[in-house]
Amino acid sequence: MWTRIMISIRRWLIQPFAEHFYTFGTAISWSALSSIGNSRIAQLTIIMPFVGYLIVFNSTLSGYFSTILPGAFVQEPGDIWSFLYSRNLYFLYFGLLIFGGGVALFNVVAPPQIRRFPAVENYIAAMEAIKTPNLIVGSFESITTMYFASLHGEERSPMFDSRRIGFPTDVSGNLHRFIETLFLATKFSDENLEPAGDGLGGSFWTGSGYLMTDEVLDVAYSGRRAERVLHKALLNEAVARPKDVFYLEHRALDYRYPAARIIISMFYAIGSILLIFPSIVTSIIILEFW
Image 1 (cartoon, rainbow, N blue to C red):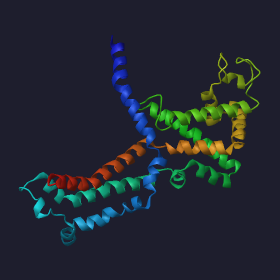
Image 2 (image 1 turned 60 degrees about the vertical axis):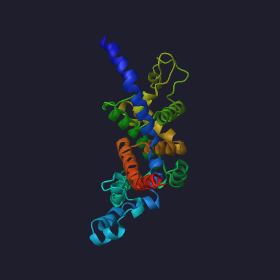
Image 3 (image 1 turned 135 degrees about the vertical axis):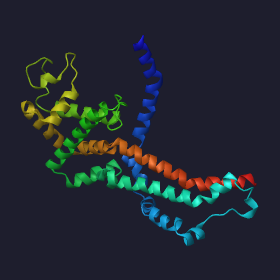
């Protein structure tokens, strides 16, 4: 009875919410946020709140910049639109404050690789120009670290879903396919052996002949002593495919720190609403007297 109720609740309430949450969380990648955070105008909003403070709380300047409705538009005292119109300066100030806070947070939290190279092709080209074996290995290890950190971190969250906004399904799928490519290129793939063979690689095959890429990923990440030879072989194969490694690293970094991405997007949204609110109020007043 209770099991059916819980299944129904998850199906009709939690699952639709989780679906929308995943869609929203993957839409606001760092590269998407960078279109705002990296713009010159947006970066100026970081200092605008301090300028706004001098205007709003300086009696002379505040009077100069104050907005008062023309006599033809003034209705009875206490009219809500007149009141809101008279507070336009405050809406602009808090809009710039919140929006600038989002831009500042973006510049602090966003991965520097994404801030500098929002487009993956530009990142690959830049990394190709300076690639070394150690650099490629470092990038590959960074990918596996982000994968397991996201997996373990979101499993502890009450919002946990099999799909993770810190490491989305398409990025995870690309990583698993890449790991399979690396494994099959090593001498440990045991392609000609039965899954239950005695070779080291044979332990990574299921009875039905499927490669357990999760297990191979664990070896690539942990580098346990008993499997150090395979770990080294996987790294060597990764070094031979630098473009794939840099591509996956950029994609993984693009979705890192999901909570920060959500907070910054909310700052942008709330700040933008406050900034356009004076225009909305003015338009409503004009339409009323059309």
